[in-house]
Image (cartoon, rainbow, N blue to C red; front, side):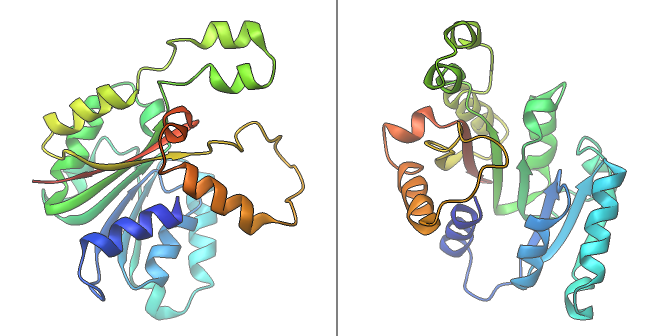
Length: 222
């Protein structure tokens, strides 16, 4: 995800430009801190108090020049219009949030309004086109059968949604193509660099990316 996001930022914006970034659902702030360290100004939105506390603790250990470029707001992303003016950000991130939203289309429309002209909306969602792949590859046949058609956020629907909110799909990737069945807490392999290279290649290559566990979609505000 970090490599994919960096690729899109480098390819879309002038080198050295300090971007205004909104990270909705920032979690413990690792992604936001990475961007702040790269020179950008980041506003993180998160509703979980424990995650906010962890993000603030991590930020406190950074130099003053980095701390002053990051702002943390408590919220769930639906009230961006209250906190920010339309067109306030060059990049809006919404990773792992959409699948939990009661009204995902309304949330997306609100986030798109936060983008400046030419700004980029980066989404990470479950792949609604392949929910049966994980249990099927694990030999859980009943689970695979039960998962057909259970997730609504497929590529076709999201492409239409992004077009409808004025941020048409620019590019997309698959995330966790081969590694999604690896158990939590598994020991990292010695050839981790090779594993990442395989996942990165598969995430941008058909037909592999189409059956990834997650989709990373980047729309651009016209």
